[in-house]
Length: 160
Image 1: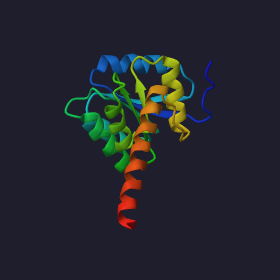
Image 2 (image 1 turned 90 degrees about the horizontal axis):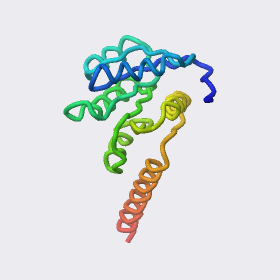
Image 3 (image 1 turned 180 degrees about the vertical axis):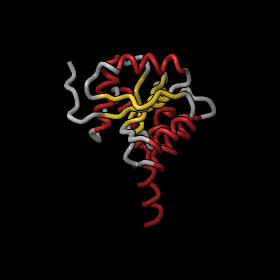
């Protein structure tokens, strides 16, 4: 059993299909510390809710059309930096996951993760922590290592 969060978490669900968003909302409604403030299917609807309501965490499906999830992640982090964005996707492809992290997402939840993993990730995001699968953590570490090598090479070229 996952320990409930001490503060009510206002959660916005953004999914490409309303049915899937409603299923996730129904699964989370029983959590005493999670309040669903909206369940929408478009970027515009999501941004309206972020502007009008207090949203602590936005769970955004990576399957939104036209790179919508990346655009929405960028828009939310610019509009309300205190709102944490979690990407919800099917892929474990490193480059795809990292694009969301680089756009400002706090974490990436795989659609085949358990409901308990999703709840733990939402609570961690609210606390300013990151809870990701080991595969995603490895991808992030690999990317950071690559950036560190690149930075070191640039620094060496400047000093020589």
